Image (tube, rainbow, N blue to C red; front, side, top):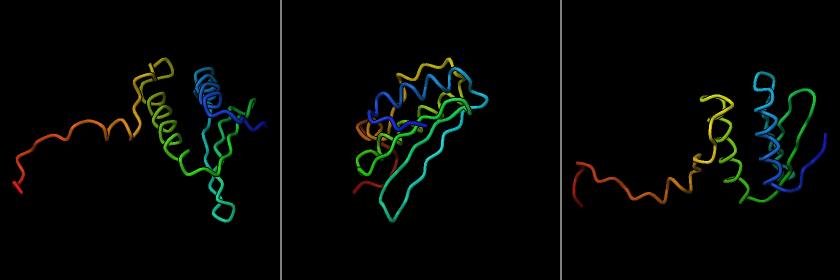
Length: 103
């Protein structure tokens, strides 16, 4: 059980771990209110990867990691995760014009 300090390395190694054994890989997150720390853990019972942070900006990174894991679980471990978008990319799209009331 080792803490990885680099976010990019944690994401890359987590995706590799999931693709190697998707049946037994687990992803867990734990937030401690008293410390203000978020711990993310990915394990397959053989290897355990952990990432710890106390930065609020890492919440968006965590959301993108959730989307990556949802994509891998839904489409299969061979799915392309390069097109996975986080909330920030969805917000940058122009709003759709509907048939709502004009203001």
